[in-house]
Image (cartoon, rainbow, N blue to C red; front, side, top):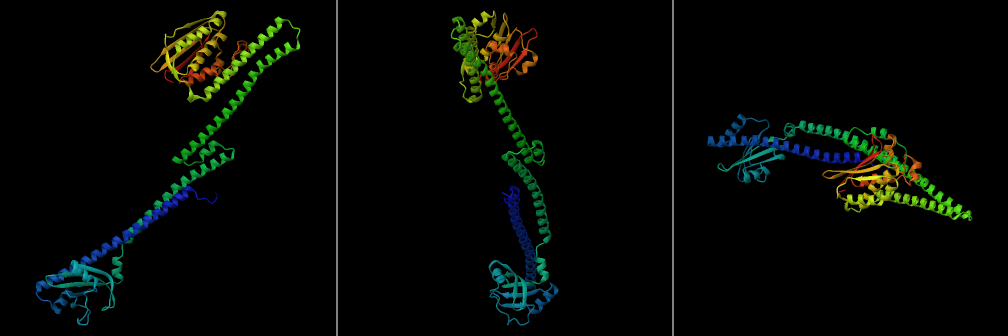
Length: 473
């Protein structure tokens, strides 16, 4: 791992290699292009000389050594060699030689062959056995006169320097390339810094070491990748805090469940031990203890059922039993079920719901919403009070209000009443068999149907629960 090359280094070296190949190819191409351009200029210059000489011969009507020598002398070029050939390659005139018969046939010279084939030709830097030095040759064929005019310049240092490509543009290209690579290196260095910092953070997390999220996030450079890395650090911090919160809630829930189970179990055990240890108690006392055991077992069963309902809501969000249900019919059934309790406590329910309220939802959860809220009002509002159920319909929503005119809830308790096992009055809740989970179940069920729920204390006494349900959850 220690010798592993970083991503930024690999990226920089790869781009450097590709860019170097590109620059080398471009410089070579530019060098050859400019060189060929200058060769073309020189060839054109010598070709023009050839044409002027041929025109001079045509105008004079004769082709003598003296007239040719006079023309060459009157049109001087330093070191210029002028040779006239016939179509068979024989030398007719050469300003650098007096005896032409000793000169070899020039038919196989490359520039001569090209001239006979295409009218003109040239050869760069070929050694001349006659002059014992290198020349640049340019030949032009004139069919009407039956001659080939060939001119040549010595390929010395001056000519070679003239034909060499201009190095200024090449140096500018190389300098620009170096600047580009330096800028690219700076960019990849900043990229590598972000990656290295993110790798270090990942190693800290993997080893379970403590870290300061703010300090780790501030260490990233102010770049797009640095910003993404900072978001990753903050996201991990929030995720870790969320996991810690879940563990804390789980421990708290376990403690609460243990505490809630302990009371009815201890009561049942105590009553049964009393019956077993006192066989001579009266039948009335024994029946009283058995009835108390039954009441505690009912409370225990209700607690288990509520815990099961909460767990089901937490775990099966995507497997709800969604179907068309009628809220008005569900509330009517609940009214029938609690009629005896209402009569015993001299309470009334005013139901202002329409005859039908269709909704696409989970019927059992919708039932638990209204049943728990109504049971809550029956248990805690007090005798002789009234419960009112209202509904306001919008395009995609139902907005419900369930209120009572009972003793109400102190303001300081309202923010906590939807928490699991939270009780405003523990003694009163246990007296009426409450588990402390009813309102938590209501909140979860409402949220699973796309809505939210709030509670508020009414000015004249009592409490009102306001919640919304989406028509198609």
